[in-house]
Length: 81
Image 1: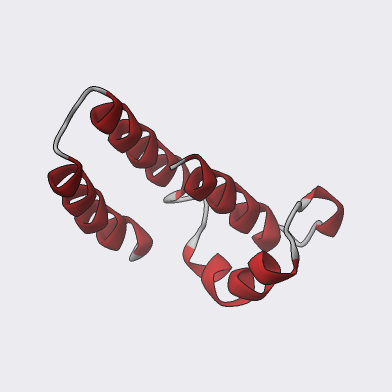
Image 2: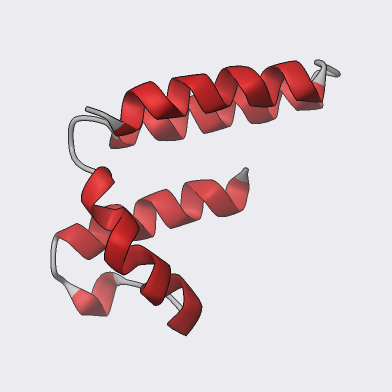
């Protein structure tokens, strides 16, 4: 979850076109070329919040499969914004 949150941040910064603020390796930069367009100011905070909530639920002994399924549905809706 922490890695996902970091990539969301990096993809948001990628959209700002400020390369000195990005900390992407070569593979992540290749992924970000196509994925960054889905991360914008309308959904970035909500995405990070949902990832954090899912992490807390799993740490609190929630059923991982149910938490991840719920997270996947929420991500689909958030990425369409």
